[in-house]
Length: 328
Image (cartoon, rainbow, N blue to C red; front, side, top):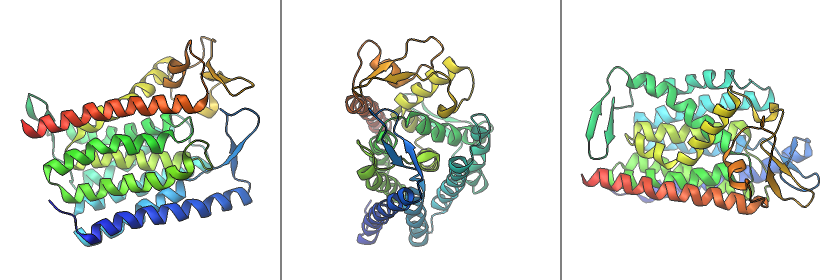
């Protein structure tokens, strides 16, 4: 399996487009006073928001060209997923949809995969082989895109986490697809990594821009779409396990779909020197960050690095799973 110079050029182009789109967007957002408070910093620091349009421009332009050169209908399905999830995210950025409505509306982003039939109704289990799920699989597709999109959205509470997390956890997908020999899905995965990497330059600690729901939903939905149409669903799930656990802790402790901005008691609090500590109030939601700083207050950057280490561990294990599945 080989990608040509044109394909590698497309990946490079996706980085360049996203990089400059983000740079321009930061200036536009600041000049128009579209900024939000960076809660986990001492004092009052404001950051440009939402940066999602830059990610969306990079993803959509690259996916359109990828479809043109490959004529692979699976890429068209992924493009549809990104467009719909991006639109939902943009609406949520400028006019909040609410914690309950958003997951339901995101089901629409799954529709292109089902309508175009770009999935195999089976799951490949390590040591157990392939299991056919002809009836239930379409329902799993409808659920999966909202889950991956919201999972990435929920973990995006600190500088650089969402884009950095997707970069790391996309590597197992990339390696597995390389082993399978699926060049078109390799290309799409490289585009996702490249776009996130370009945005991460500005999103990393200390952030100059936040992606907003439009950004996190787009990259989260695309991640899920790649795993589904590439037939590597379980590897995709295993790779993002830290984010899935974060969402699970959050939902079970809140017992409802509540937006972060609508939480009455935050899971952590920031001390005057910028140290982040766990909130002792029992009504505060349980999150990955709260668990990390429980009994061990820390500054933001070490917490971000801890999340990246956790994602790296899950990514390595997911890669091992992918290699073993391919070998067996």
